[in-house]
Length: 127
Image 1 (cartoon, rainbow, N blue to C red):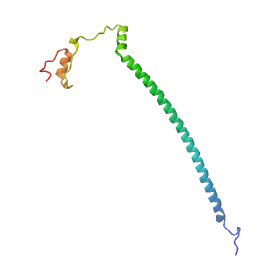
Image 2 (image 1 turned 30 degrees about the vertical axis):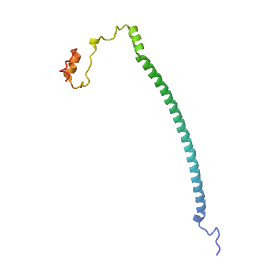
Image 3 (image 1 turned 90 degrees about the vertical axis):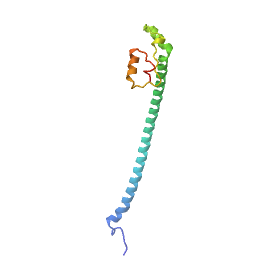
Image 4 (image 1 turned 45 degrees about the vertical axis):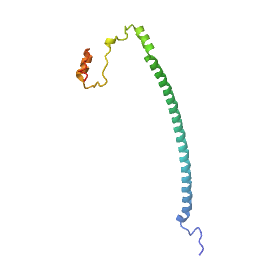
């Protein structure tokens, strides 16, 4: 008995068509995924580039601010500003300078209060 296409069931004839469709679907999906990934990589590269440019701008700005701060804190600049504002500030006299001992503890309230009151501590008060 010879078999021909009329005697085959529809499921047998549908199998190769389904396989071909699934293979095309996988290949097409892979191609779309590849293009999508390339697109995302390009976008991320652009974002990284923009971030690096922004970082460099911020570093330059930070350097400029540090230079400005250093110039404003220099003794020459401070003296000029004091004279310009007529603040009447001068270097302290030697008797106005209070020297703290090396072992001065923050918990030593009585000694600290005497410093604030302008009294000179004796050697016994220093421990």
